[in-house]
Each structure stands twice: as C-alpha cells, then as structure tokens.
Length: 216
Length: 216
Image (cartoon, rainbow over all chains, first blue to last red; front, top):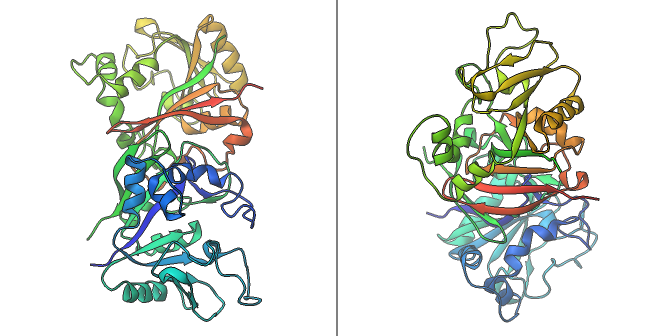
C-alpha cells in the first residue's frame, strides 16, 4: 500500500527543522545548513548533484533509502521557493535549476493557483490550492502504488502529523542546538497521535530516528 | 577548578525531562520511567541500589562517569520529594530510604527553611532558601575542589542554564516521545547562551550527548 513518508528530514537536538530568518541566501535559515552536513557528505547526495565521491556507510544507506520506491513528492510552498503571496509571474522555477532531483510529480501546497510546471528529467511541479488532504490524494494517484515522500518544511510536516496522515518518518537529529527557528515537536503530542520511535542509530554526523505510526 | 555539571540526565526526543502529572506513585511523571531504562540496566546503577549484575559498556561508562569527582549535589525541591509549600513536619526524608545514594552534602532548593537532615552513608541534605547562586556557592564550598552535580529537575536545570552557571551536561536522549511534560529546551536559546554539543553516541537504549559551555 502506498505510504506517506518523511525521509532524511534533518533537525536539531532542540527540535528545530530550520533556522530562523529564511531568505534566498539562507533557504534553510541561519545555521540551518549545519543540520544537513550528514547528507551532503554521502555518496547518494553527491551523485544526485553530479559530484563524484562521497562516503558510503550508515548515513549513505539512509540517504539512499530515502529515494527508494518514491512515486511522488509533496512540498510546502516555502520548500519550493522564497516567493510569498500571489505569484508575481512564472519566473520562479524552484531552487534546483532546470533538472530538479525529484524525477517524479511534485505537489506544492500553496494558496495561489499556478499552471503545472514541467521540468527536465521527469519532474513536474503541480500547485495544489485545496489543502493537504487533496494534495495527498493527488500525490497517491500520481505515485501509482509507490510511496509519497513529504519533503517539508516543518509547518507542512506538522500539519500532516496532527491529522495522522504520515505513516513513517526518518529524522536525522544533528548534534547541534539552534536555539530558535521552526520547531517540529512543540505542542504536538506524538504518542497520543500514535507515533513512536522504532529505530535509532548514531553516526559521527547525526542520529537517525525512524518514527512509525501505530496501525489501529 | 570545581565545575557545575549535569550528569546522566534523561530526556525524550521531544525534549521532555519528565512526564506530566508527577505524583508519589509516579515521581518522574507518567511514562517518565521510560526515559531512564538505559540507566537502570547498568552495573553502576544496580550496584548503587545493592543489586548484582547489570551491563557494562557505553551506558555503564557514562553512568559511572556521572559519579566521579563529585563533591556535592544540588537538587530542586521536587527531586527531593512530592511535598509542596511549607514543610508540614520533618517526616519526609527523600525518596531514597535511610541511606541515599549521594554520600556527600546535597543542597536542596526550596522556598521553605528546614534544618539540615543527616542521613546514613555520608549524605546530609541542606535546605537553601536564598536562591540558585547561593546554593552553588555553598555546594562548591562543600565540594572542596571537586565538581558539583546538579541532579535536576527540569526547572532547576533551566534556571542554571539561563544564567550560564552550568559548565557541562551529559544528557541521555531516550528513543521515546513523551508529547507533554517539562521541556528542557523550550524557549532557551542554548547557542546564544554559549552551549554546544561536543560529543554524541547512541546505544540500543539511548543517545548520549555531552553539552559544553564555551569559555569566553
């Protein structure tokens, strides 16, 4: 059965999934990049961006698993770009250049309609204006039995968690504190929502956590 | 130089150092015991309470380190007992029976004066009513050059963190979510206060974190 999964989502020890003050220079917020060091060093990520080398091992295994059996993605608007409010024009085409690293349909949550955007390499961005459940339905249809990966950001994951629509999350908790930013856990009661940590392992770069929804 | 240290302080992935609804039956709050499983299994903790066996290894190494070179302790009132408000009498003598596992002077923070309580095995409870800095001064005097261990609870650690009086913390982040309770990190900006994570390692039971204050 197609699942909704978060994969390789990095956060700090104090629960922040991005630093404060996101901007076009700092899409992950101030110090947000520190959270992702584990990923940038892996073979999987380097290959994805056309670079040689990178490390194999536990971090890479998790990075690789993150792309297996994914038939569609869902992204919050801020993951797609820094534009807020109505689209001024069609010029913003994502952070990733002409060939985004998705290669499947990507459903972007927004309050502002926009025509689908067909990119090179199999990625098409669809803009969904009628809510998270509609986005999930559309993504599951597009995924044709494969899983749907929810890319973030924090606010989007929190919406899907609080409605119990996420089946599994792989979080990577970096050994850093951010002190402020967007907190993934604040005010969310994960045990009551049915989530528990079912696997954890640390590497020099991060601690990998698998969080699973209990099936009732 | 004598340092103020937190050692072996257990918390959940979502930052809670104790569960909700602390009571005499549940001194660590509902589900709070889950946080401490790593410790209960160690040789060090079992020996401390007169039991045989227990595991050696990384968890035990951290547990053992927690008692090395400690000349005094500081505890918040709730760590000492469930009594709130003025002491009704002298009958509450701590959670630990006649021979508490401290064996050094212990300074208990409270708003309500009480005579020192001399226990078996070298532990004396002193009740400090004039604040956290006074307690630290008294504890350092009593420790005679050794370190002072701050036992908790969460509110007490937060007070000492926000005044930058803690030199080092060993936290043990259990692979569980609590969803509510007392949060160690909420609203505290550790990087701005000068704290960073300088060591981390996971075991099947927990992830050990060393948090160190930068010296300016």
